[in-house]
Amino acid sequence: MKKGSSSWNKSSWHGFTALQQPNWPDKARYDQVIESISTLPPLVFAGEIRELKKLLAKAVEGEAFLLQGGDCSEEFSRCTAPNIRETLKVLLQMAVVLTYAGGKPVIKVGRMAGQYAKPRSSDTEMVDGKEIASYRGDMANSVEPFAEARIPDPERMLKGYYLSAATLNLLRAFTRGGFAALRRVQAWNQEFVKQSPMGRSYERLARQISQALDFMETIGISTDIPQMKQVQFFTSHEALLLGYEDALTRQDSTTGDWYDCSAHMPWIGDRTRQIDGAHVEFLRGVLNPLGIKIGPKHDIDDILALIERLNPVNEPGRITLITRFGARDIEKHLPPLLRAVKSSGLKVVWTCDPMHANTFTANSGHKTRNFDDILTELRSFFELNWSEGTIPGGVHFELTGDNVTECIGGARHLADEHLGRNYQTTCDPRLNAEQSLEMAFQLAEMIRK
Ligand code: PEP
Ligand code: CO
Image (cartoon, rainbow, N blue to C red; front, side, top):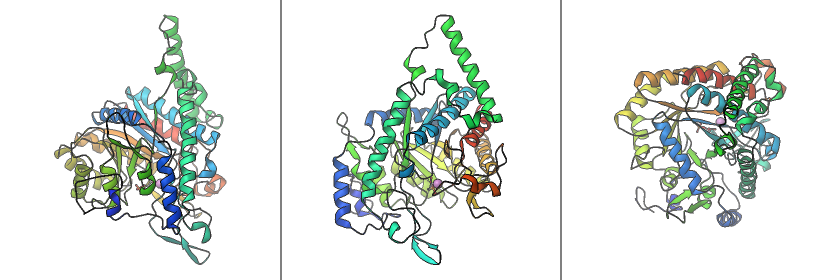
């Protein structure tokens, strides 16, 4: 396959440079694993993917709002019912707060059921004076700080597939089987959050919703309908390991089109979005809605060319731009990008990832983020969109339903010295359940307008 060639097939990316791939030592075993994954069932279906794209097309027009969130890096050992349930709960809570304030549908997309591969800024790291390969996510190697543990093992992709299937199975059960019914809105509040100011604000809101439902019942309007009992929940992850994504790419029998069926919404990372790179080549041929991460080091013309390459027919809902510039730099980087994309007439969902450019190392040595920086970037994102006449269409968070201590700040004033209490993440620091809910209430003020 020649560079720039227009013919695409799900493996045409092999002719291009793929950055950030693990260096699989056992090529034969790698090929066998990829072959077995390609015969296993798809994780999601084309019809669901098309449904998400339709909703995102509404977000382009400001008629829906995207809430995307979950772990920086899911871990095999944390693929448990309580972990999945608690993260889902906090996303549902945030969505209720945002729907109530914004008066428009909130599209719920988890960084879940497949967020197992990580790009790294360095191939190696120093541990106790020894240089070892970097951790690249549970689907590639182990986080254990030993040279042998860091050797990429293709069996991990198979395990990642099965755990993604298990996670999705539970998510589908929870969101379709009554757990996510609006009648249960009060039950999503977690014990440790209930006592906090955020928890109490949520209780009040949940009570109002329950009363509205009671009122409807009283006057004879049935609330026993699917919209009240079920939630549409979608999955996403960074499409990083191209062999794995390729193996789960399937042709839809009803349309003949190709979809990456590893998740509804794959995204392309800030480090792998080169226009002549393998990730772009792969993603241009699948019809999923795509996220594109954009950090401070971007070039505007590259971004315009990239959007056109990935969405040549300018289909609304196909492209979600996920900007991550940092609280300090967003004012410098976002307005020129908003203007350029707007004047090119490209249809995109503008979303803000206020996490990835606000990371720093605390005095305690923990990698952290400050709640206030996250909030500041979000506020600027909304204000800059309003002043440019573009539409702030969504947000992207790293969060968990656990009571972790990874980000400082928030209503409980979590400080440096508290980070060690329950610091769990193997990659980037996440907002805990209470901080996430607080963020949703702050966001509600922004989208109310
Ligand atoms: C991430 O979302 O975890 C990530 C690595 O993002 P980015 O590509 O924006 O750095
Ligand atoms: Co991250």
